[in-house]
Image 1 (cartoon, rainbow over the protein chains, first blue to last red):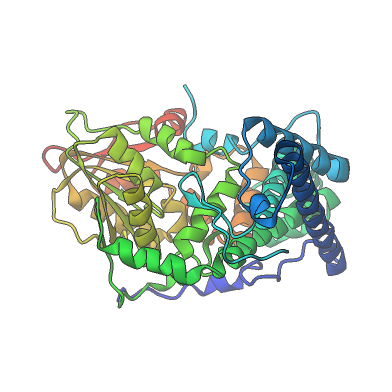
Image 2 (cartoon, one colour):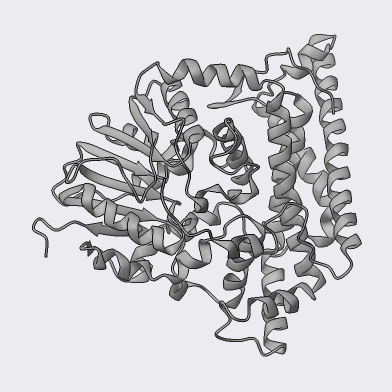
Length: 116
Length: 364
């Protein structure tokens, strides 16, 4: 066993324990924001399922639970789902979104492996 | 959400599909939300944070003494507090969804690992009695159980990073890209390569694809990680060897490897372990061998106060407890102190090529 000194300060960090960090003076605002985001997720799950069921009904004439669970969208359907999801999140959360200028996750790798 | 334990949903690339379409759709949403609420609002949050810090007179010498003042000042800005709330909630949500979704097939996945342990191509070596040092037992990235405690944490990590990268790393594309940029010894010889802190072996596999005739090893402190890494590599037909080892105590001979890589490992290590790891890498590299470290820029290269604050918040709230130590430890000095010749010392070159340490032909 390696003999390392326990790093107690890690356990003092405010976010060490799940559910502890609050960013607003009133933690209820944290809770409400989280609830809204999670409700959004549950709504999208239902919409995703409906879009798949409609697609299967149109293309196969029937739909079963197994067909939905094993459904793998082709490129066209994947794009349709992605676009619908993008519209959904922007419509619901657009007031927080900066449409003028934004980064994306790809910038992460430009930080540690800059092009050029 | 609907649960169904019997329907085979196949794989998504190299990754087993989640248990239900509902779970998969939920994580697609989380991934999009990360882009919308985090990346999409980053600029505005950065500007408002800078203004708040300026107004509060928090302009220099902030780390480590005044980080709590920074936290208070910046979370007084509603947009910043919302940004941090979204980041934390989405991070917790995707890990929990992944763990819950796979849990009903736990026995199946554990059996898969047991079978894979003794099958090739490649191999895996791990110790069921391995004693983990304390520093390795935190929930890195707030992944439940971190990289060591849950026997399926490699599987969880696989899908979790898929969400983190918003699909951009599907097929391990980003690892392949970074591996393609990785420097090699000046004599061009790569017969043995080792990837330390390999996690689920994405960079190790990229090394094998780049150097198909080389003996490639992936090392990680987490047994669940190397077991899953081996299973994942073997499914791709790649002859990569994986072993459970702490990076500061490599069970490898002296002067053995031509190339050692560390891709996004060092910011997960406390500074004393960083120093020990560099010394170990020096020991196992042959004279003329090369060490390539890909990781966050050092503090001197940080692009302003906001980035420093965000690094602190990542350390505090996103299970990156040692990242502040890493960016402030001046690793560009530690590498030559261990005996390496640093190929680039300009920060812009380092951003492009990583930190590259060549072990001299004769020790200086």
